[in-house]
Amino acid sequence: MAEPLTEKNREEDAILKTQIPGFDELFREGGIPKRNTVLVAGGTGTGKSTFCRQICYNLVSHGKQCMYVSFEESIEKIERSMRGFGWDAKKYIESGHLLIQKINPLDILRMKFGSVSGSGSATELSYKIKPLIIPKDFHPEVIVVDSLTAVISASISKEKNYRVYLQQLFNFFEETGATSFLITETEPIPTRFSDTGIEEFLADGILVLYNIQRGDRRENAVEVLKMRYSNHLKKVFSLEITSQGIQVYPERQVLLPGYK
Image 1 (cartoon, one colour):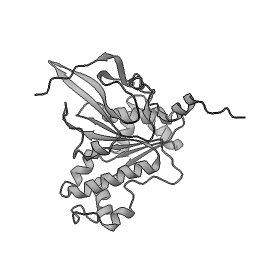
Image 2 (cartoon, one colour):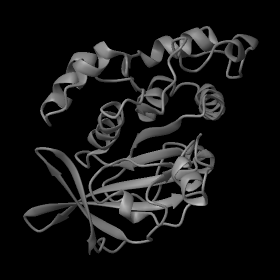
Image 3 (cartoon, helix red, strand yellow):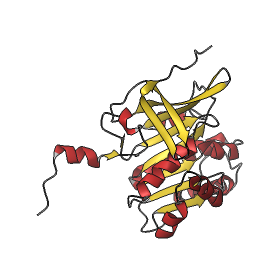
Image 4 (cartoon, helix red, strand yellow):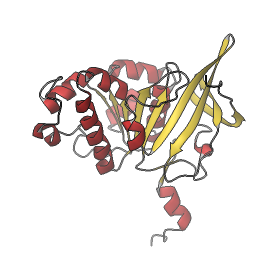
């Protein structure tokens, strides 16, 4: 006979443990609330893609399914990048646990709006076509989109199309029940954390990754700027990108350079 669910079990069922060393300790609950849609924001070299790939690898190696959608890098390059950290992506792709899709953002916009320029408003067609395609019988625990910046670059002539796509994408994630991570490129020390500002409003969480220049060296750091339905530490913490992946140090606080 199955044991009744305790309050602790219920809490654990509601939390996604990333298993990134040190990161889950930034949350009193021990991880990110499941079903949240989280922006992973930061400049070049901050480890945004590595962070998301590490979460996927940690989960698939424990029997979960994850979906990684790339609007920029090829599947082969992503596999090679993961292999560099000792993560055998190919093994889990073949086992059916990891799905990596390479999608041209221009194709997505043409499919949804008829053309990249479009009419500047959403057509009936755009609502009939899902913003992403998940194969039947595939139930991802996590979905990563790498990156939203590539989508808005493709639709720059008609920002309204991007806004419609974005709204539908967030609604889509809610329907799937997955925890979603959306990568977005920012300035090295950002004062805004997405391309249009709408992403920040729609997202349940914002993780900011930093690559701070201090004289002749650089220091990586991470901040949980926002996370609905959680109690998290509200400081910036040291992060290292090692040969085994990302390591966060909750005991090491980092001071950001002052804003001008």
